[in-house]
Amino acid sequence: MVVSLSTQNGVAIVTIDNPPVNAAIHGTALGGGLETAMACHQRIAAPTAKLGLPEVNLGLIPGAGGTVRLPRLVPAETALNMVATGKPIGAAAALRDGLIDAIADGDLVQDAIDLAEKSTAPTPTTQ
Image (spheres, rainbow, N blue to C red):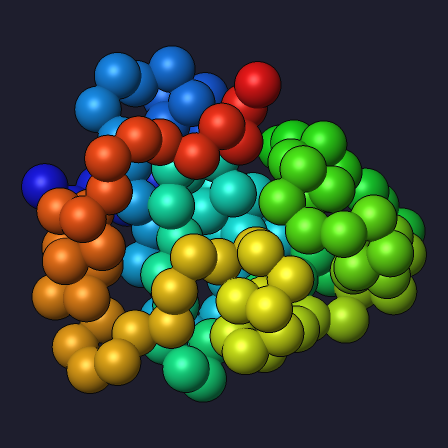
C-alpha cells in the first residue's frame, strides 16, 4: 500500500496507525514533507534527496512536530543546526546521522518495499 500524507492531520494518522508506515523520499522533503516522513516508522531516500526544515527562513518554526521528532532521530547538534539555519542535508548525511534508515540502491519504491519486508519492529519515533 502506498499512502501520501502531507498535512498535520496526516502526521497524526501515521503516528496512531497500527501497521508500520515507511516513507520513500524522492527529491526533497522539506518542512511538512520531512515532518510527515519523521512520523513514519522507517525512512528510505533516493541518493539525491535533500531533507530539511526551512521554516526558519520565513520566520516560523516547524509546526507538525519537527522540533520534537528531529532530535529523537539525529544528534542534538545536527537537529539544532537544521532547525536554526534551515539548511537541508543530503541523503548521505541523513543516513550517517540517523534521519533515514537507508539510501535506495535502484528503484526507490521497490527498495522501500524490500526495507518494509525486512523490518521486524517499528522505530519508536513517537514515544
